[in-house]
Image (cartoon, rainbow, N blue to C red; front, side, top):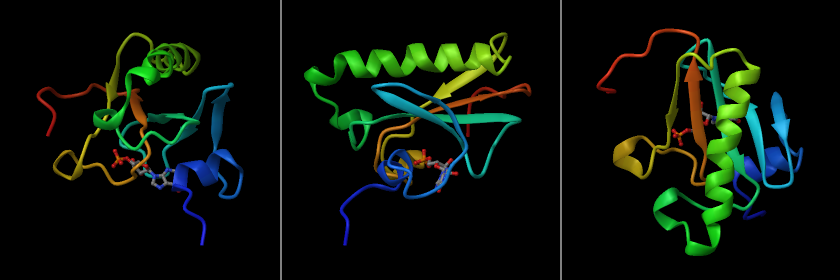
Length: 114
Ligand code: 5GP
């Protein structure tokens, strides 16, 4: 059995997904269960489990995820209002143990979040 994460399987095209963007360091896919009109996930190709387990050596890739989130928000026409979320750990609702940045927009977003 493969030890690959679900998102690594998507990155390797073993599981289909709607891919919005790909570069050397990350992919951006549309969430299968969108919580807003636009809901994409920015996923590093390196399978860092969660932000709490990122290392100093991951600094550049972590920055790249946010810069990519902003570029994709612009491309998807939600640059005037979007939310970036990282769920870290079970109590925060993390369900896939491969770091991913949610980018949500296209509707007004309440604060505080649930
Ligand atoms: P988390 O709950 O870990 O922060 O976020 C995981 C996200 O991955 C959820 O929003 C969920 O809908 C999404 N997701 C889970 N499985 C798949 C899948 O197979 N394809 C896609 N595109 N999204 C998925």
